[in-house]
Length: 396
Image (cartoon, rainbow, N blue to C red):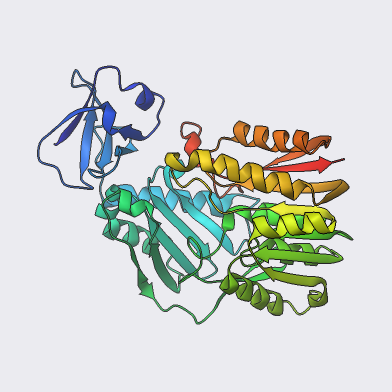
């Protein structure tokens, strides 16, 4: 079998069961190899360690499928892994009855670069790793076997990460018939999912539990939802009894989808919702000058650091939005603030928020650390899988 030989001492991360092998750790590859091929990974002395998929175009030269080097990677392997990942979600007591679920979460489920989200009877597949691309047929077959009740499987492998893997984007119906509209119910709130053109796989399932929390905190409150996208936080706030919800996004189509979401729920008080198509950074400053104040401010910006090269500018962006967002929080009010940038760690994000509170002369308390739900597990050996981090802060 084709073997990837590590440089001396570069097996340490693998011994901790981290699945990534960077190009700087590779001594050589013995044998002919194509992008996405499965190879044996061995120490410099030839001791086998794992089986991995190779990405010849990426700095992450290989990602481990499993750490049992004498076991094959084949169709049966993917059937097992995908069935196990799905079964864990369906058996989890906190996830029962959810219509929107992440069923496969990449490295955390032992399936690097494979994302599978379910929205009712429709599932959306995303693959961002050359190794997964090579096994696409097996992965689709495993999904079909594990979820025979699916009406449709749609592919949204159009992430920019594919270019780093030497892969072209691919989208389209894999099997079944896609309904004209896809709607899920999330803790009593109905939400449209745009699986064809929406962000990521069509909807941000990682914020489900935090949207519910926002609703629980919103009773009688004046709420600001910045970077509102399709209005998930806004609708939960309205359902929770907010007296007014102001939502900002720079995207007209996103706001139109948010209005359509609101129209789905006839019981929600539409007259308490205000929508603003504007640059968030600019409007926060304007409202600050106008003396606007809110009881609950939600800051859920897009990924400011899609790669390590973007981390410095991401830090500046998080400082800016939190500095000015805090100034709109009334004394004794609450701030829910998030980062989904993997390049910004949990502690660094807390330090940025603390720095902003100090600059604003505000006493602040962290009431809760916020994260994705249990359908987005974090592998203990893979801290990179903990990309979403957030804080619930009281500001005096």
